[in-house]
Amino acid sequence: MASRPSNPSSLLFLFLFMTISGIAAQKTTHLHFYFHETVRGPDATSIVVASLHKNSSTFGDIHVFDNALRDSADPSSKLIGRAQGLAASSSLADLSALTAINLVFTAGELNGSTLTLFGRVAEVTGTVDRSIIGGSGLFRLARGFVLSRTVVGSTATTVVAEFDVYVTHYY
Image: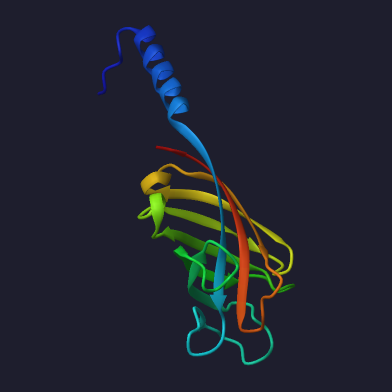
């Protein structure tokens, strides 16, 4: 049987200390970069790994990807990381997908840190809002959101999306 603390005020002090310490260590960071995906051809960075349909439906299709994260929309701009994850076509009514993405940073002060995103993509042409559900490295205990939108100039072979990341984390 577990013993109970003899002094409830010491428990209150510990709770207040942990709360104040946690708030002081919190930081909010805004990141801005571009997601570059190639969906066709020999250098594809996104592929369908499961599809049960022989017709035009995409429901149930599963895509995996390993896309470049760059500091601008230019495909030759500086590589800052990778977006690695999967998307599952999850609607009978439209082209929406459930996405799970790890943003893996490979350059600068964020090198070795990650952010984990989860969310629904309903329209490729509108703004997509995803949740940040965790992170590692500089982004331990991360939470926040990501807004992304397709950049003009994307083609049938490539998709470029602008990402605005708003993340609260401890560091």
